[in-house]
Image (cartoon, rainbow, N blue to C red):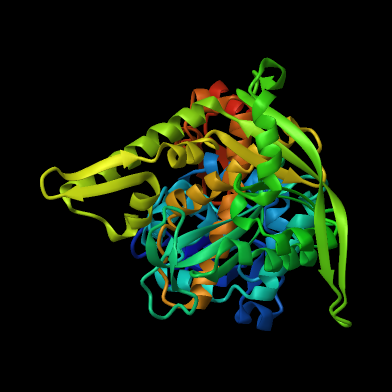
Length: 533
């Protein structure tokens, strides 16, 4: 007598049969008699006895114990890359936190996240083909209809709980980088789609996505979906509330100049948050100190060869204002702030070249008579324009106005209430570029340049699964950067190199792993995980 495992093609359930051999005298050949005794629980791998077996009171046969659950059918699938994701998920606590927050669907979420990373920019319709050839947490196909149901079932409470749990694991003393991006959408059923200006100054129907990143861990912390017409400067108060909800303790923020405003700075002071924010050189707060710094800033004393930049710094007072919510009393005081000034001569040259090309365009438009209504203010600002019947149009550049525009080229400003060293502030701010790369990954590799869902619930769920994928992707890119792997591999080349490692499964036996080369072992080591065994 032996046990036979057969998987139904109709429902995917694996049934267990008790097979007894006998000799068929009429056909004169060996035959088998099979009796179904139950099915295999897909979660635990244990036998669930059939009703007939329970009614007869028979004891279920002892399942073979060989470490891992033995395979129920013969299969050969790619395993190396998904093993990497499994290991990262365990290391960062992503798998455990997802299981806690989404006990019914965490395996599907992980499998879709793995697919989005591996299948660069491919739609969900290709998931069945990928699932057939790769090991993954869910282990089965997720048709397009099921994936839509999965996205729609991801609730806001569970999502916010996941953000909290991940933040508790990773948030310590690092700065939080905050930024927004836009995602185009022509769907009329999504409530937050609005006409808005993206980062390239294109007016499009879109939604906005705000995200917080850990500056040193380089891992995403949380995200928020916003209407497409919301300006960056108005999102800071909600972002601060999100951070309070995460209960991260001491908060330190780094943001670009799109978020700079007096109310925002006052609110950060009121909450006792540390911050580094870029500011415009045209601000009254900056102009006086910048004019003072021009005289001696561009000198050897103020030059950093490591950063390729000139720098200077001034302690200043911030005119703090707070309105008491209950009494309406206005409190005015001063707070300490550091004004960090920087000058990049290469950037100044590039800006001047671009400005002169713009002036060439203005002159061409005026001389040809094809004036652009949007440029009328620039015509008047930079040129004396005369027109006579004999000589036609003549232009005289206003050199003072041109010089006034060019004088701040190459300069940029950071303000901080916590970092007094200008070079340290610069390094922290430059690390904010990681969030731009993250948005690039989200739009390009994770296929979110445009929304492709028909309801707000599905969009929220899909964004969350892509956010989970972004955690894995960000971890891999940081490890590759820290270990110099980008000199010899692209991200896709690294994943392809590991993906070819196979896992072999045979009925009733423990699986085994194909050959792992020294190169693959080295890659796993650099990525901080053990090779499959």
